[in-house]
Length: 338
Image 1 (tube, rainbow, N blue to C red):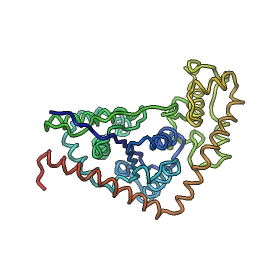
Image 2: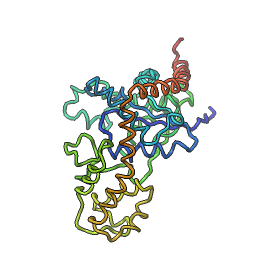
Image 3: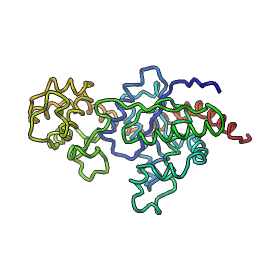
C-alpha cells in the first residue's frame, strides 16, 4: 500500500462558551493569526455542537458563537485568508462522527481525562454526547484531512485519540485515507494561568473576575487586574531557571513574553532584578496597548450580527468544498451505497 501524501492543512476549534479572555487570545487566537500567512490552508471552527454536550440557553449559545467569531477576526484572523465556520453549518462533521463512533472503542472513551473531570461522580446523568465528544473532535479534524492541529497541553490526549481512530480506520479497511495528524504546541504562553493562583489555568468559570483579563475589559480594568495580580516578594530572576517553583512570577513573565513576541529569556534579560512594583506597570501598559484594539473591534463587530452570520455562511460554503468529497469517499470505503 503506497503512502498517501496529504496536502498540509491546519484545523482548530474553540467552544463558544462566552467571555473570551487573555488565555484564549494568547493560547489560541494570537497564534492562529500569526500563522495564517505561512501559506498553509487553515480552518478555524466555533464548535457549537460540542457546546451542547452540556446544557445551553439557546440565545446565549447564539451570542457566544457570534462573539467567538468576532474574537477571531478582531485578533487578526482574516476571513479572506482563513476559513471561519461554526460547526453545525457543516453537516459532514456530525456525519463522519457517527462513522468514528463505530470505530472508536468504549474503553478509549472511558479513559479520557476530560470525560472523568466533567462527568465526575455523576457520570450516569451525563449526556451521551459528552462521552462521545472525542469522536466528534476526531471528525472535526479528519473531515478536512487536517495534517496539523494547534493544541494546548490539556488537549494532547484528544489528538492522540484522533490519531488512534485514524490509524484503526485505515487498518480496518486496508487504506491510507486519513492522516495521522500532528500536534503543534509552541509559544511562551500556550497555557495562561490565573492572575490569582498561578497553579490554575485562566478560566471563565473561575468565580473571581479578577483571576482573568476578559477581551471585553477596558484599559482601566486591565491595568487594575494586573496591578492586583498575585506575586511573591522576590525580585524577578535574570534566567528562566529562576522562575521554577514561582508559578505567579512565571505566569506574568510568560504573558509579557507572549504579548511582546519575545522569549522568556529575552524578557528576563531586560527585567531581571526588578521588583514587581516596577514590572507590573510595564506589563499593564503592554497589555492595554495590545488588547484595547481587540476589544474595540469586537464591540464594532458584535453591533452587526448579520455581518458575522454572513462571514460564517461563506466559510461553511468554502468548508463543504473540502468536507463533502472526503465524507463521500469515506462512505465508499465503508461500503455505503449512494
